[in-house]
Structure formats: C-alpha cells, structure tokens
Image 1 (spheres, one colour):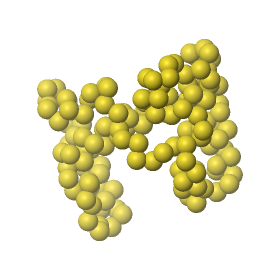
Image 2 (cartoon, rainbow, N blue to C red):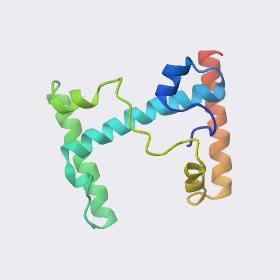
Image 3 (cartoon, rainbow, N blue to C red):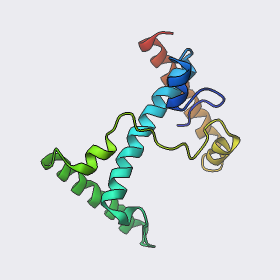
Image 4 (cartoon, one colour):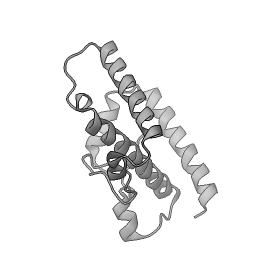
Length: 141
C-alpha cells in the first residue's frame, strides 16, 4: 500500500512542519512510522545474518527457508537476550531510515503500476482511503 503522493511523508517533515493536518497527512505519517519499524527490523536481520543482505542465487524455495530460519533464530535470540547490543542499536526510536525512494516522485508510483493490475491498484487505493478515514476518526483533525 503506497502513501499519498504530493503529501508530507517523511518523519523529519512532520518534525519541522508540525502535526499532520489532513487525513492524508495522518495516513502518511503512520505509514512512515510503520515503514521505519519494518526497515529497522530488517536492518537487524541483515546485520546479524549477512547472507540475507547478499543472497546468492539459491532457488526461491531455499531463499524462503533461509529467511524463515533466520527469523526463527532472531526471535529466539530476542527472547533470551534482552540486552543484545544489536537490538539496542536498531531500536533507537529517533532513528529514521534514509529516504532512498522519494515518495512524492513519479518513479515510486510508476514502479507499482508495473507490478499490479489496474483493479488491484484501485482496490488498494480504496483500502488506503478507508484506513485514512479511520485514522482521521481516531486522531481527529
């Protein structure tokens, strides 16, 4: 699900420009926050298991099993090692992932157009609008 285009997206923009004012900005802020959490989680996995960062040409099934196995080991370590240095490094809430893809650009949208059918894009845009409406009700404008 893509964020709204031509609407503030990056967390630093919200820090500079204040709280989100529209439901689209609220959605984009929530999307950006969740994206940061997900990217930090993958950062920990790639740091701990370099094979995930530079995956050799394994079959898709083997790649799938490697990811599942490393996630299982990661979750196990997470439960038994509460003070793990790697977890501490990546859990800095103030840490923002780099904006390697500018979400307000045409390229971010055109990339998704090649992957999904038009009816899939329509469904996802409607779902995004529904989530934005519900966020707006929760937070208020």
